[in-house]
Image (cartoon, rainbow, N blue to C red; front, side, top):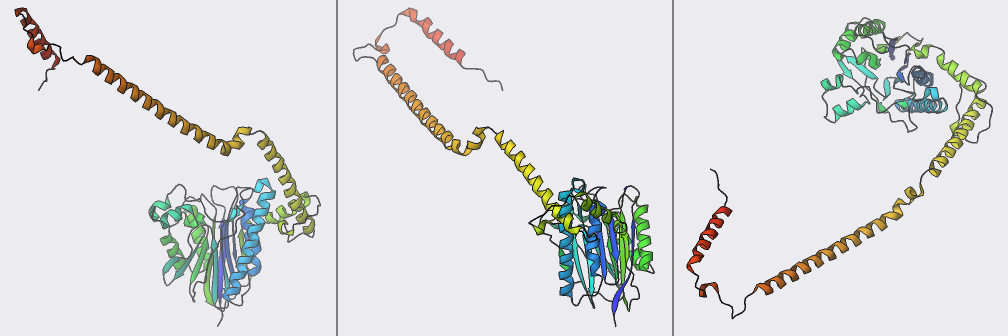
Length: 404
């Protein structure tokens, strides 16, 4: 008994977007979904590049390990091309894409995933999300800083932490070998669906639909009814015995010839030059002039590096000399502060000594000699009484009254 896919794919531009940046692929042994980003100039190119590098794997792998290695290699090649095109063409800056790929090997499945596009599996009436979003909001949920309900309406839910392209860093994929059985239904979808249609509704549609094609149509229709603010793409596959489909379905941006046009225009616009770094070359898989187009990429990069170096030198020349010697001036500042503290201490000691000397001198000048006559020995005349009263009155005036 041979198990395989009964599949369908469908993509829609939505009600607001000006271009479709999603791409989908469904074949007898391979399912792929990519959601591109990079603006109208590059999102569709990004997702098309991912599909183009993976579609050659639509054949049974010998074993799950071989399937995983082949998916890794193809995705890394797509990542490299995305980075190269983003660097060489300013109009494609920020080029990137999500990607989910499932490849069959005999009676096993192998899945790789990066980004916030999702894979769901319906088994026995129970829907399960098989991927974890690589988004900032999902990170907040995983770390307990947000609840799933709060994440649904969070203003930063579209911020992604991992995608293909966008940076020169190595790709980090989620990899798995999910179990599957006859009757399972798999859904790969962009956030244009799962971001606006609840998981419960998605599960009901997958369960009640008579075929993968009907499921795709119903799900896309629901996303459009929810407003359709984003591109929406679905790839649905059912695990069946002895599948009879053999023609793949390609939808979205990958179904157009825009990627081929961009590749040809890029190669024709580049002058012929030699390069000593083959790792930095851009390879055109469909043009016989790929070697000349590849050489140019290194030449242009070298020219850009020289320009950047000259700009950097000019900027450094404009920096005042003092700003380059901050580290040497730091010890001088500390010594000055120490000297200031010492001088301050000496001044305080001198002031204290002066105050002490002054106090002692005043005390010695006011002390009475032994032959001096005390007040008790002097007989005050009768006219001194008013003085006592005056003193008493003055003492009373010095004590403030207390109000209670």
